[in-house]
Image (cartoon, rainbow, N blue to C red; front, side, top):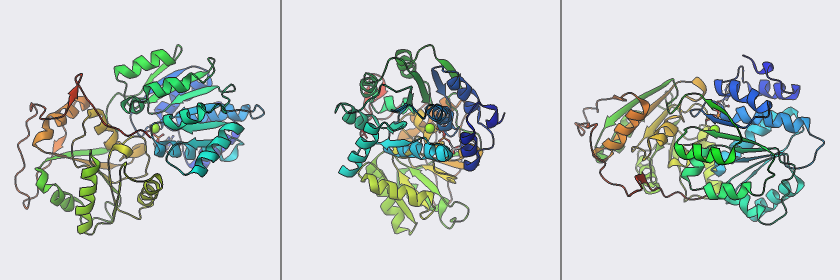
Length: 406
Ligand code: ADP
Ligand code: MG
C-alpha cells in the first residue's frame, strides 16, 4: 500500500514526501481510511508504530478541505508538554504545503506564551494540541469557541489515565459540541481504557495492531546486579563507545536517582544531561534538543520521556531499575528501534526488582535474555522468577503512582 492510495489532498502527499515517509505503517493503513470514512476510532498499537500520522493526516485533510470555515476544527489532548510540542511540530511538517495552522497549548511557559495561546484559541486556529490542565485553564475563561470542532483526539490515552487526567478530559469534553468525530490512541488497552472509550466514542472502529509487545528489532537483555555495582556496569557498557552508541537513554523511576546517576556519570566524564520534573520547561527542551542533535551522548531521565517522545535513532536504552508497571517497560524500551531501526535495551535487576521483572517477562510472553556480569563486578543476585513483591505502597491491588500534572 502507498500513501497515494489514501484519498488525501495533493498538498498532503507533498508533505508526506517531503518528510520522507515511503509507505504507511500498519496502523496508518487501517486508521486513515476509517477516519476519512468519518468513523470514531479506537486504536491500540505499540510505541513507534506511527500513530501520530495516522490521525494527523486525515485531520489536516479535513482542515484543508474546509479552509474557508473559521474556527477550531480539531483538538488533540496529549499527556505531556513535550508530546504536545512534538505533535504540533509533526502537524507543521505535514501541513507545510497546506494553509492549515496548529498551536501547542501547555503550561509552564511565561506570561507571553499564555497570551500567544489565548490568541490562537480566540482566533480559532485549525488544530489545537494541548495538555489537559492548560486547556481547562483557557476553557474556563470563556473566550474559546469550540462550535466548529469536528475532531477530538486523545493521544496516549493510557498514559493520561495513569496520570489522573480522567476528570480533566471529561471536563474538556463538556465544552465540545456533541456532534463530532472521536479518535482515541493508546499503546496499551487495559480495561480502564475500554471503559473510557465506551463513554466517549460512538460505535467505534477498533484497530488493534499488536498488544503489549515491544517492537521488533530491539535486542533485549538483562543483568542481575546489586545496586552498588550499577554505575560500574553502566560505565563498562558505554565507556569508549561514542561511535557505536552515539545516543544512550538511561531511565530511572525517581528523580532522586536520576540526579544521583547524573552526578556519578559526570565524574566519569561522560557527555550527558538529565531530564526530570524539577527542571523548568525551557531546560527540559534544551536538554532534549541537545540529546536529539547528539551534542550529548547520554540522557538520564525519569518516565517523563518514556512515553511518546520521539527521538530518532536512540542506540541504547538502559533501565537502571525495573519500571513499576510492566507497560512502562514497553514504553521505555520503545524509545529505541523506532520505525524498524535496530536498538538495544538493557535492564538492571536487583534483588528487590525481581518480581517486577518477572511480570514484564509474563507480559512479553517470553523470557528476557540474561547477560553475565563482567569479571570485575563479580556475581550478582540469583534470578528468582517467583520472587514476591518486596515493597511498594499497593492500593487496590495497583501501585499508586505519584505523577506531577503538566
Ligand atoms: P507512536 O505514536 O506510535 O509511538 P510516532 O507517530 O511517534 O509513533 O512515530 C514513530 C516514528 O516513526 C517517528 O519518527 C515517525 O516520524 C516515524 N514514522 C511514522 N510513520 C512512518 C512511515 N509511514 N514511514 C516512515 N517513518 C514513519
Ligand atoms: Mg504517539
